[in-house]
Length: 111
Image 1 (cartoon, rainbow, N blue to C red):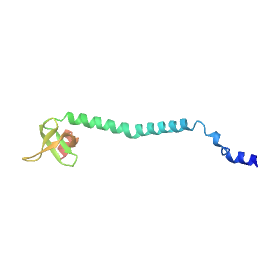
Image 2: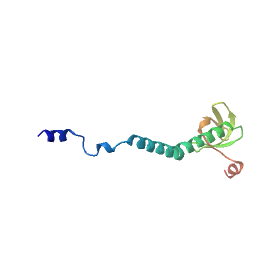
Image 3: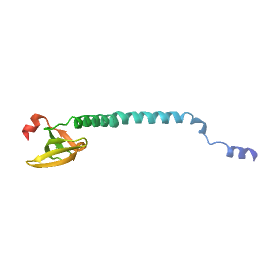
Image 4: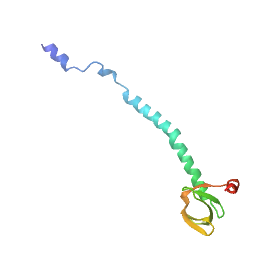
C-alpha cells in the first residue's frame, strides 16, 4: 500500500523532457519579428521618408494631387501648410502632409 501512494505522488511521465523550451520559443519570436520587420515595417518606413522628402521639396508652381484626389497648383508655401489653386481664382489652404503626389511635367500636360 505504501508503494502505490509513492507512485501516485510522483511526476507525470515525460515531464522531464521539456528542457530548453524557453530558448526555442524566444528564437521563434525573433524570427517572426525579423520577418515582420523586413516585410512590413522597413518598406513602410522607406515610403514615409520618401513622402517627407517630397513634401519638403514642394515649391511654388508645382502641380500636385491632394490625398483626396483634388488636382491643383501650389501658389503659396508655408512651414506646415500650402496654398493650392484648384480652379481659376479658387485657392485652398491645405496641410503639407495631405499632398499625395507631385506631378511631373508630362503628367501635368495630360491633365
